[in-house]
Amino acid sequence: MALLGPSGCGKSTLLRMIAGLESLDEGKIYINGGDATELPVQRRNVGFVFQHFALFKHRTVRDNIGFGLELRGLNAARIRDRVEELLSLVQMQDYGDRYPSQLSGGQRQRVSLARALAVKPDVLLLDEPFSALDAKVRKELRAWLRNLHEQTNVTTVIVTHDQEEAMEVADKIVVINEGRIEQIGTAEEIYDHPASPFVMQFVGEVNVLEPSFHRAGESAPLFVRPHELELLDGPQEDSIPATVRRLTTFGRDFQVELELEDGQRLVAQLNRDQVKGRLEQLVSGLRTHVGLRGGRQF
Image 1: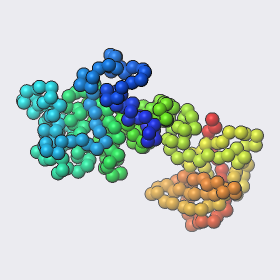
Image 2: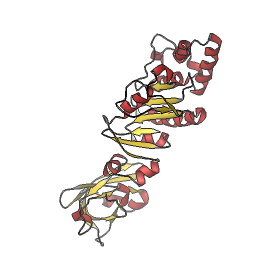
Image 3: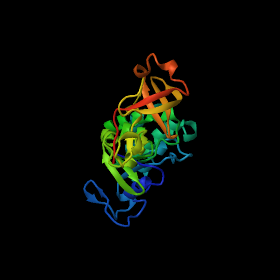
Image 4: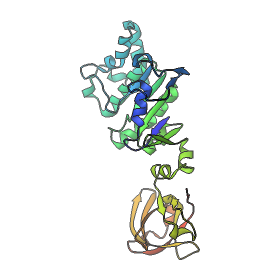
């Protein structure tokens, strides 16, 4: 499950409450059906992965992974077996004798995950674990984390403000705004059937059209995804006159920035088939008309 929302909305606070690092003013925390609200951190059996790795610099990778097992008093042989098992699980078999300073950011975060899994937690808590990494490494680790979860089958809660990350790794997403849950659902439910204007605007790109532009007599704005806009060769019923201001290429897709007659800006997302034969015509200053293929009001 992903806790998704903007900075300061309460995602990490909720995660720390589950871990027992923050106290509750009201409500209950249940883990495996048992009331854990008053349990101290060490008795909750949760694994916690922090944003900035939090590895011991003076300990090797093996020693970092085995640290929690040492605290639990396991004998050396059992610790060694579990550490080797986890090194294989996180694909770090050849790095056990290295120190954190000798690892890349992605490798350090894998070690952090292995350390959290070492004690076989009932719940694995991840607090924006990939935010300190570059985009390519983040994408690689998201896919790796999803596969890891399928292997370990540990209930996992991840905090993120990255919508793509939440959609890729989570079975369900909890959208939070100013300390309140706006919606809980799958990625498809959150994106295609948002419960509020906040969810619509936070999850995915969106254009907001004032009522005067789309339907006579309407009082509510219309929320339209960029892919729900199309550029027409001429005026049609309910089309909107606009001027092309910029065309940006994103590999197989194109983004067209448009300006309406009152100065409002819209963004349309077009695929190669939609711009086929028209690419050279879509220059700044071109007058066109915009058609609506969808939209949602609240």
